[in-house]
Length: 323
Ligand code: SF4
Image (cartoon, rainbow, N blue to C red; front, side, top):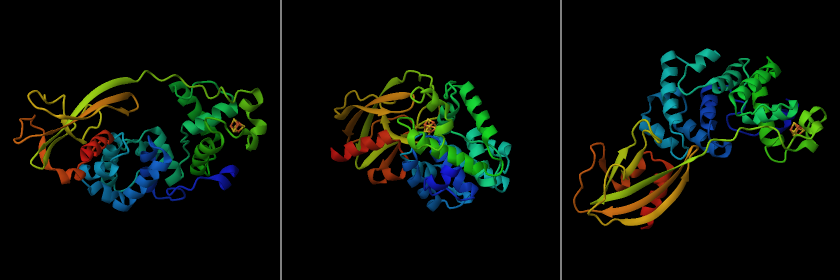
């Protein structure tokens, strides 16, 4: 906590007690780096300054503003939770209440609860787990369920009841800046004298992590189907990646036989957490609209910006604009 007092990162949601701003930052940071998340946080706070404004927006508006951040279920959950909060008449002020909001798990409930309402709950992420694994010399894998339980329980023991929010943020920053994954700054560390990993020469081998499961490759194909200044798009269905976002004609839905499309780019690689996508992009101009599945619509090309799209499709549109 002393270290944090002089080393904390300057983040726009720090020091605020507004539950909405804190919750928004936590949802954004669930799978996004701080540097990128900062811009999006400002964007959302500007466009939807209060939770009521977010609740009143359409899902399309929210997805469009979220565009580029990935993991779009977060945006949909954010929107649903905003409506839950408005219905409740405000943010729940207990961990159990926060936990009932869509998209809020134990960690996020503890983070929001401790920072906004001073609830005594440890919210420690991978950064904090690493610090504890090294400092106490614990070799339970930090990404296993046993590890999560062990380190969360330990953090709850360490948590000072009067400043839980500051403690949580201090742990996060200490891991991010001081006890970093590679080359931690042990020589200038305020915990060096009592750190187990440093004393036992285990800094390099802690924390222990379980190896991730193999990432699968998925092939995809898209055709930018243009007909008299309009382009065919559809909304991605539930039960797959990018639910609710828009894309041009997906070659799983339509065959190009009999047409002569231009190949824009082949095997564009796009990496998601559990999958590597390899996508082919085509461009096809037609005089008449081919028959497409019923969920496709035709929109003016210059209106495409109004539709939330995955990053891969943005890359495709850049290729189309160069063609
Ligand atoms: S001494 Fe090194 S390993 Fe131990 S807490 Fe400090 S930075 Fe981390």
